[in-house]
Length: 320
Image (tube, rainbow, N blue to C red; front, side):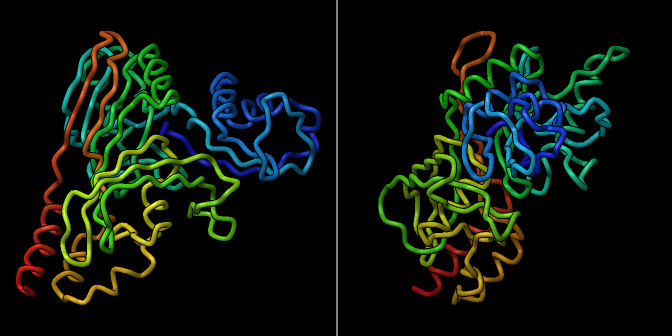
């Protein structure tokens, strides 16, 4: 998913008659072209319905939009560690650790991946205006794994086009509750939960969302899945797994209370120690925006997730 923020607003009297794309571009300080792309992708709803960019806003319209986050011009560079897998003049591929927010948002202005990238790019260009990190997709704070970042405007637009065309391959490893059988596809639209605004939910009127999964290994009451997503909706894998009653282990938002239902004390303790959802962006593939060459990256499970898996494997062996 492109780096975005969800915006909820009610159109004032002064917005009467404005085109939807014009109104949002002014309110969000985002280019009209990017707003139009978000509208075309179904990322903007007016009173719960998808509208065209030419829709004329009416006072009192409730508008919900997942749109590209405004470029932060005063981003504070911070000397934070980065695990870089590849870098050239156009792009950078890295592994984001769990616990780090990708981009500054309400209440979070320091310690983000964007702050770290601003410092890294500044070190490469001493005395020159530092590059702004071109973040074209993001991971949840407590999801680890691979990300690609653009270093030029041209690379940013090229990568964004690949994400819109759904040609970027994004694969995740997820440990989920229950005994999942074989392979499957979850084709279920996602929208923001009307009662709990921090959550997403499967909703027939939501945006299209499709996830494909295959079983990698079973560990008694849990199953390790490889999940590939066609779309990149907010919390998509977590929502979809919860929807099929196999929530991601350690997920405090969509876990359905299943962590507390684990019968073996060692397994419950392993999840408590983990302190986050067991979700890792393990595979990323795209076309280099300048070289036009296919790029593929694989990331192994980080130590905390490996430790959790060993605890499940060990306790199951003890039970047998």
